[in-house]
Each structure stands twice: as C-alpha cells, then as structure tokens.
Image 1 (cartoon, helix red, strand yellow):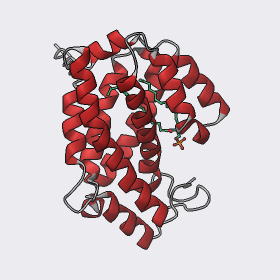
Image 2 (cartoon, helix red, strand yellow):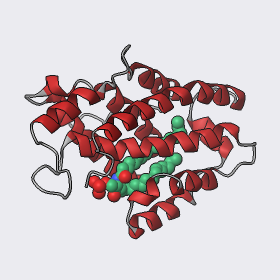
Image 3 (cartoon, rainbow, N blue to C red):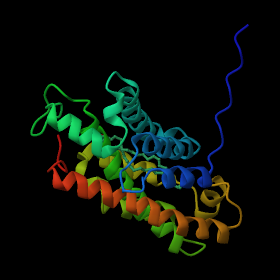
Length: 217
Ligand SMILES: CCCCCCCC/C=C\CCCCCCCC(=O)N[C@@H](COP(=O)(O)O)[C@H](O)/C=C/CCCCCCCCCCCCC
C-alpha cells in the first residue's frame, strides 16, 4: 500500500524571517541557499491561498529548482553566495547578456526574477504593516505589483496576476495564515522583517547594477 502523502507544513512568518536573517553574511554577501529557503517558505504561504495562485507558485518553484540544481551541481562551490555566482558565471560566459541563447537557466537571470519579486514583497508587506483593520489586501498587492514586477511582465501575465489578486482574503484572514498571533504581533514582526528583506534586496540590486545585469533577458 502506498504511504500516505505527508501533509504540507504550515506557513510560519517567523521561519521566513529567520531564514532572511541568515541570508546576509558579515561582509554583506547573500547566501543563495538561504535566499532559496526564504522563497520556499513564502511559496508555502502562496499555496495556502488556493489554486488561483498556482501559476505564480509554479513559476517560482521552477526558478527555485533551477537555483537548487546550481547549488547542488558540480560547481556548487561557485554558487554559495550571489556574489560568487555572478563572478563565476560572468567570468565563464555562462550568462545570456543581451538576448536569450545558450544559457536560459543561468543563476544570474533566474535569481534576477526572484530579486524583482522581492521588491514586490517589500512594497506589499510595508502596505500590509501600515494598513488599517479594513485595508484591502487585493489593493495593496496590486499597487505593490504595479510599482515593481508588472513592468517586467507581458500583458497576459499582468492580466492573470490582476485577476488572482482580486480573490485574496481580507487582512484578518491573511494575518491568521501567518501564524504569528494577534494583529499587533503580526505588525511588530513585519516591522522586524522588512529591514532585513530590504537589505537583502539593496545588496543584490547594487551588485546587479555594478555588473549591468538588471535587464537580463
Ligand atoms: C509574509 C507573508 C505575506 C506575503 C506572502 C507572499 C507570498 C508570495 C510567494 C511567492 C511570490 C511569487 C513570486 C513570483 C516570482 C515571479 C518571477 C517572475 O517574474 N516570473 C516571470 C518571468 O519569468 P521568465 O519568463 O522571464 O522566466 C514569469 O513570466 C511569471 C509568471 C507568473 C506570474 C507572476 C506574477 C507575480 C505576482 C506577484 C506575486 C503575487 C502573490 C500574491 C500573494 C499574496
């Protein structure tokens, strides 16, 4: 008889926060392993929102798989931090710089997609943190998306994302799924999480800007 499937673990905002804390080394290098783990935690949350978000979750999972393949591959030591990954892939011409070609699954272009999504997350969580009890998560999510990720997506993806946002649960239900405690505790934890997420974003953004990698195809 087949073994019963293990139930998917519950999302915990604290766990995600702890993972993002581990992302930055003392000299501000970003650990790919913890970056990926942070996204895995967030995807758990996304999955708990229902199948409408399946197409988003699927894309994020695919990108994580690509990064894990690099992390566990024969050149794994080059993929310990985002800084070492950028250096290695650029020095070995493993990145499609101007148009898609031989390296559609480079670590640099794959992480860039998640990096852009991290900006969306930062903007969304900041809205969530400062919103009132009756704040609409769908509006907060759409505003954050329009200010960040949307410019990188074609019309059809923007449309589908916009429709998915409309079915987001309200702020109280949202806070409940975070498994933190009272709304005040959630707000406090978001206050702790945001500077960390923001720092990881800034460090990556500066690194990518320095190497002209912000528009990788
Ligand atoms: C702390 C708890 C509250 C917040 C929880 C948020 C949970 C979010 C978890 C995951 C977010 C998904 C990240 C999506 C990565 C998208 C990467 C991307 O831009 N991919 C596109 C480009 O890829 P290539 O074609 O160039 O390879 C791809 O076309 C995208 C397809 C899917 C649509 C992506 C829409 C993203 C919308 C933003 C996330 C909304 C989640 C709402 C849930 C609150």
